[in-house]
Length: 375
Image 1 (spheres, one colour):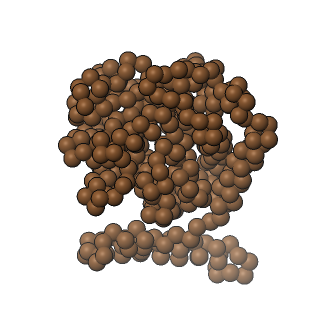
Image 2 (cartoon, rainbow, N blue to C red; image 1 turned 180 degrees about the horizontal axis):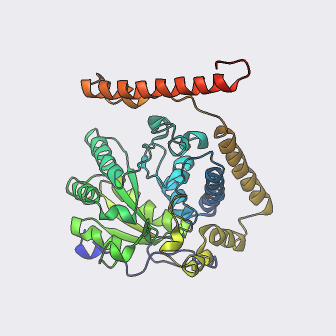
Image 3 (cartoon, rainbow, N blue to C red; image 1 turned 90 degrees about the horizontal axis):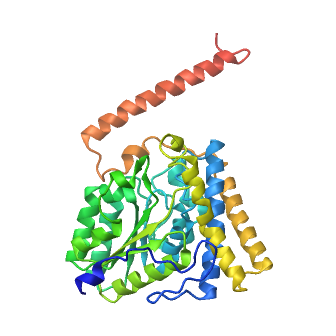
């Protein structure tokens, strides 16, 4: 590939504008109506998942939720761009993509509820556990893709991350290894403008994050991350290239985090409301709805069907998160190593003693509060 082909465009690829009108592109074709309808269904479900999860946090039934409200086009695009046998390596903000790959909503919420590290069978769904540390999943994705290549498997991996992850050393290591060893992986950066409160301008001086790709010898691509048609087209090209032994690609999607980083974040401290409101007009859901309506593909019946399906998902989430989980504290130590070290055993005994003392104190307090109980 010529060096000029590695550089991204000056402007992000767009196939549907903010008003839903078609944008003709010489390189990327508009996906078919059936594909766009499947994507729209995913967007409707994704928006409902985000809103329901945020509500569950406020009700105290979910410990934390990093919402992807406004980024659903990236989520659904990543899930649909790969084949059933390919793999997705998500971040903590990619619950919608995880569910779109077939993971049950209740299982996808286990990590964020705080019950377990991962609540789903990664091999059954070909979705790696969601990663909270920034960029660690990129190394895992590259290693997995490299192993698949060595085994001669026809596997492509999409590794998701945010703009903040590009400031980590793991990002560099993953990119460099993938390019040197020609690994079938697509790095998909959802650039939503902020790494918690740090704006992109304080993370890089590059013209775009996609421009970083040329330094590693792989192509960089920029796409309108709120245009699911463009996301599907650009990711589709990168996936096809990887499957044809063309090596890795870095795709940067320009999007925006409409809500706070998590429920623990006060985003009014670092961005103006006017800035957030300016992105409302670029809503990926409204954009695709307008386009599909204009071409006569979206009917009232389909709208009702998609909305009903989204409500069923939300109901399943509510039901699953309305139950208490019986947690065994020893699980913190049980699965660290096959044989527990003396240090881990000592730590477990310390915790065990604290748990037993707490339970004894609670039992005593209950007995004293009960008529006829211990005095």
